[in-house]
Image 1 (spheres, one colour):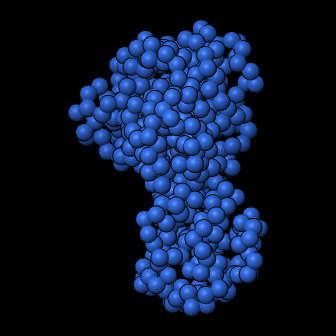
Image 2 (tube, rainbow, N blue to C red):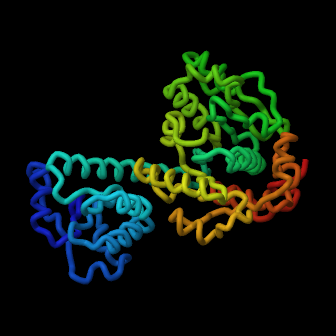
Image 3 (tube, helix red, strand yellow):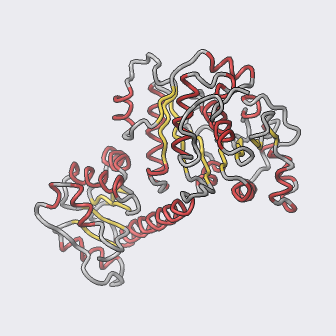
Amino acid sequence: MSRLVLATESAEFEQRVRDAFDGEMQGPLRYWRDDMLGDPGNAVRELGGRGVEVVALGPDVPDDRALALASAFDHARPDISVLIIAPPSKDLLQSALRAGARDVIAPDMAPGDLRAAIERAFDTATHRRAIFDNDEHDNGDDERGRVIMAMCPKGGAGKTTISTNLALALAQVAPGEVVILDLDLQFGDVASALGLRPDLTFADAVRSLESLDATSLKAHLTVHPQDDLFVLCAPATPTESDDITVEQVQRVLDLLTESFKYVVIDTASGLDETTLAALEYATDLLLISATDVPSIRATVKEIEALRVIGKPQHLWHFVLNRADARTGLTIPAIERTVGINVDVAIPSSRSVPLSLNQGEPLVLSDPRSAVSLAMLQLVRRVAPKATPADTRPSGIFRRR
């Protein structure tokens, strides 16, 4: 099959694509059977043959069938970029992105724009395949190179609480091989959540960036009192972050990923430029949300943005914090709204704010709590081969 497959009966649209590429597209592009859309799973197998990178659905495919097929591709073949060929609208674009499609493009688009849209889909497919190749290497027996980003579009959902508890839990699985980076450079409070008073911070590290290597960077890390976890803390004041550049963030991440088996990144709310830069390193994305309506709506927008950027869904872990809060929203309702299933549901606990005030995360202070056990589920997702099979005190969440 060609790199591009057009799922359509329209020979006219096929010719428009050929003309847009000035004859560069050789061989058959169209593939169609009258009953092909009856079973999306079978359609994926038929359309997603060897060498296929982009599948364009339409322009004669009904919207509901195109969305169902895009969703089937997203689950079974996320390495393939899906385009929906239809008159674009805001509602259709949102539905398409939720289903995992790359874009919605008009069938009568100008040739130059049509070519550009298809080439962007090729670029996304190439990026996704590169991530899959890295994952196959990273998921080997040594489980190296995991970069776990905690992301949340709005503050107050417990992102830092989750990322610090996760980092400590991982450090008990892999002592000395875990670092947490506070990438909320202006207002990060990872140090406070862990009860640390750092002598050196991210700002100090980048001041000597020209001579910085993996060894000298470790001198800028703060060691948690348990001696199992390293921390690169955010600058002490917001003004110290003003001169930190994306290139400096990337250099620090290069060194951290060389030195540690697990890098946990606590990000600022939203998608600022440093978060976008760190996304290129991520092997796991923790999509964190609370159960209130503003958080859910913001999460929907975040997921749409990640799909546009081209981060495959197999990297995501949807974490619902305070999942049992009585907000009138059930987990099934949230899943329907967001469009993905909840992977880890963390219950509410009065102990959480107390642990934050004391600077001692619950995985240490109360390893048998429901919150700690939920964190164990998250550890099993990001480090399944390193996680003990039980939670006895001599195991992962042992009381010190």
